[in-house]
Image 1: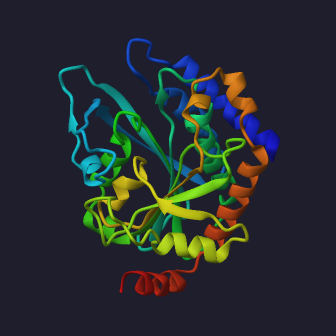
Image 2 (image 1 turned 90 degrees about the vertical axis):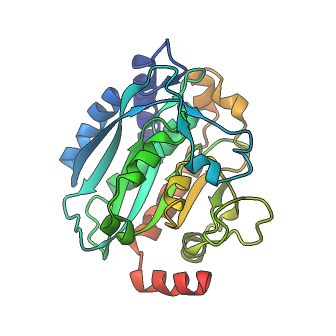
Length: 301
């Protein structure tokens, strides 16, 4: 499996380098991403492309302390926007009447990095889990999504969530987001969670658990530390009161993500990525909707 991870990461390195927008701050690479994901057609997925125009977001000073500030960002139209895409993979057995969990990662990167750590690692994990679960026929839908324009201010994920209709929102029971995982010497993977009772601010939170964090740690063998987090695509779902969690390396060490692609590749713990895929695949494959409802009631009542 480690060989597959290396292959996936090298593919996405090529996408990032090939489609780098040198006159913009951020890279999107969506044409290459669509091409790479065309292989999903040979599995059990249909690919939907959601196109939108992305602008850099105007960020308030308190964006690091108020989660709501991520949900109310405004487009900076003083500079040109660009056309980009969200890429949505639905199993050919997708059923509108079933509840849905989204498994997500963003595929754009900052212009200063080749994007191995942020976020080819997350994309690789989502791709591998999608491959493992391609024949899944359980009682929910598991939908992988690759978001564009995360680096501009969670633009792609907010666009996706804002265009879900009421029925789709009511049928969505969670989002598991993967962002910057499997970094060597990072003290392992943690969960960033969002407490639906305290939506407005991350200050003075007492409860970090939500229904997904409880279920994940009850079902997997390797317990994952759960802390309050912010600044990832999971927040877009959280804004609609959808339970959300981001899995990330405990010590992300941003300096690593700005090194050369070869140095970044050497910084990846492939065994940790392998374990994460196995744990999440098992969790999703054995997901029980009745248990979810029990956890949901005990968490929020």
